[in-house]
Image (tube, rainbow, N blue to C red; front, side, top):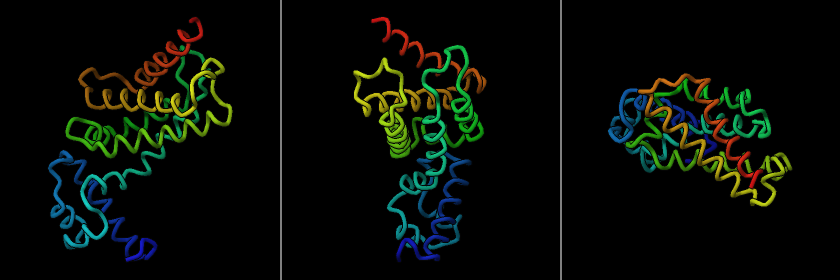
Length: 194
């Protein structure tokens, strides 16, 4: 079946909705292809026709979320003042907070390595594109664009993963965004003084 076939698109949409519903209710590692088929009201062979495993399905289902995070991160003015998180970064953390259960399940110990890698890759690509366009502080000029983008992407994914999986601390969204921003800006400032 071709990926642009309307029937295939409808089936994939049902499978994506099913996996997100199940992921909201249980750990990713406990979701089976049979359960997905039942939830999406298709047979198991149909699930395998479109996706080889749960991990690839859930990563595809969350592609819009990945794009949202990457776009928000790429919009941050990297030279904004240290004492106030940029609005795009606040919006990124608000998006994550609104979907905290999903992100905790995806980035937690029983989560999806494929999703975490996809999130880092997309963040790296968005940031690298922005940096290649000349939009990064001059202090980073001696660091390759891709390396700088990968550094920021990894740091952001790490902070988000910690924040959503260790919510015992109950750090409010605004504080989490500001904390990440201050960490980032502290790293920038120390580089300028060396």
